[in-house]
Image (cartoon, rainbow, N blue to C red):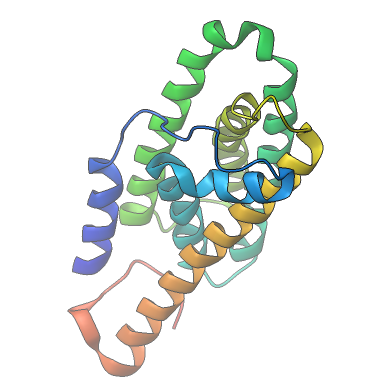
Length: 188
């Protein structure tokens, strides 16, 4: 349990404004793939969803990250569309991203009873903010669609990394007794 407290508190302590910025390259797909890695806000949120979902042994492992990805894609398209009014909307998006990191941190630490639908709705809601930030940050020199496909691919990598990290730590706890972990999990 102590290690998950450390991970959760790291998320809470890193609750910073969105800092992902364009300029990762001129190739649409590659630029989009690199964008989720360009800010700790996006990294922590997506790792957080992967870690949170992977603490459960049921459909949540797949449905929560998928709802995050679908909503992220919709948000990215909205971000491309709302570009002219981005300065008005950007403050709300940054706030949503900051809150999402805190919420996912608390979920990693304390949640063991969220329903499939509630978790999906929570992931989808906060993914809209992350997606809009990605869409707004699309460099003007490239087309939006391939960039968004790249963002989704980069996000899949981060969500998967969070899941793999969680499953690895649960394996260590179960089979090797490392860390003295006692996770609020229904896995193993």
